[in-house]
Amino acid sequence: MNPLDLRGPEFLLFYAALSGATLLGLYLWQRRAPGPGGPPLLLSDPYLIAHLRAGPNEALRVATVSLLERGLLQEDVHALTTRGARAVDRVARPIEKAVLQCFLTPQPPECLFAFSPAHAALDEQTATLCRAGLTPPKAQRRASLAAAGLAACLLGGLSLVKILVALSRGRSNILFLVALTILVGMALFRLTISVRTPRGDALLKDLRALFRAAQSKRPPSGPGREDATLLAAVFGLGMLGGDGRWAFVRNAYRKSRLDAFTWNVSCGSSCGSSSSAGTSCASSSCGGSCGGGCGGGCGGCGS
Image (tube, rainbow, N blue to C red; front, side, top):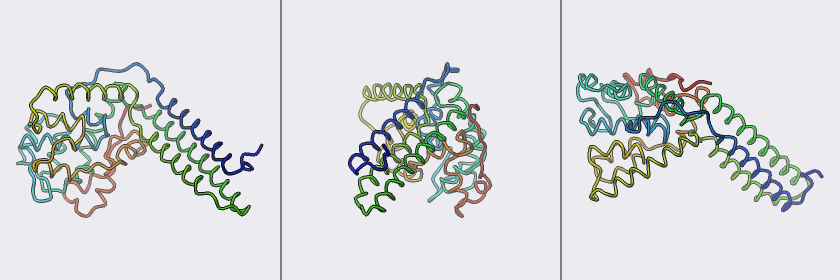
């Protein structure tokens, strides 16, 4: 029987069942077990943890928190600036050097996302996470995106054809089908932005549990210098508290929900560069050393 000839409620059940089976199949396929893990991840590295949790932009945000806390960065009205050119030589990590180099002259915080030296450090982190089996390799990401795109086209096309058939037959009760199609599209989008393997999800869950247990044994107070960077890495900048010393960086780096998605699809879906680079470079407020940083480099584990 042609499913397009089904009555409204019957077609909705058919469409829901087909969509559910498709989503389940995509989920199980994307969550298939990766190969043997590589070298163990340094759990003390807050930038790798932040990168694993929310993508490369988050590592830059957490690096900014760390450098502000250590006094190597300072607020300058609505900008950030490095406390002297020698500050760059006082740090060893590439990501920290890149952040300090970006703000040698006062820049809006978002310009960091378009600064090309930061992209190289992020590429290295992306490769590290991939080798450890915590994020999928480039080939798997491409295949997942292609499968999700194909599913969206097929399910969306089926819905559109059914709507046209219903309208041609003088029926206008299509709102439930439209709503269901939108929900299916949102579910496919959420599957698409998944950037961690099951091993990566398990590690992040363990880190959160360990950190909560450690924090529960301490007096209730705002995070100190020794805690702020790890707290931001594990839980996000929103966990830093409400006092003024954190307000600037939290407001400056409000995380876009599209960060992970753009990380997944840009540069062949394995890009270590910033997901906000295009936006930042297009902004006329990003000048100086920030302006030339668009494009970035693509790294990762390779296929």
